[in-house]
Amino acid sequence: MTNTKRVIEINWVKMEVDLSQAKVVDQYKIGDNVKVLKKEYSDSYKSYIWTIVAFDDFKDRPNIVIAYLDVWYNKSDVEFIDFNKENKDVQIAPLNEYDIDIKKSECIDRLKRWIDEAELKVKEAKLKLESFEKHFGRFFDGSLAKQVL
Image (cartoon, rainbow, N blue to C red; front, side, top):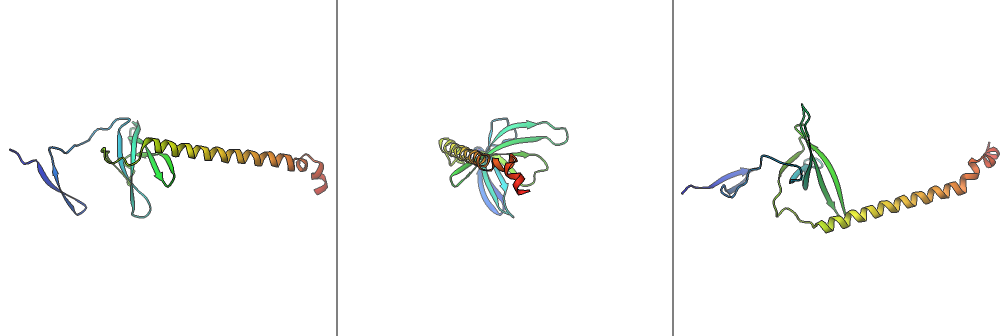
């Protein structure tokens, strides 16, 4: 019987890993969920849940386009990042089933709320434009402008 356990050390933390259960991922495809460690401010890092959305087969700098969900307070933002050899502040790893701590319905609700807020801002901007045209239009049509000049 072969010993399938090995002690590995990552950043001074020693762990015993059962190699018969370990999984090595060296190939990704579009649609794969991955966990990404992204550098934030100064030397802090934050982990995100990401999905590979495209591969750009550039000759000198192949690139993986990854969409990620930035969940904070009461919003969820979908962001994109290019992952290539020049990107020193991002690392990717396979996502395991225990990494997901938010439900799809919660994300959809947050994104819908974000859309509602944006639509409200557009309505407010249109009302301001209407008000401007109504109340300041006389100035710009020439009747009041001549008096000012």
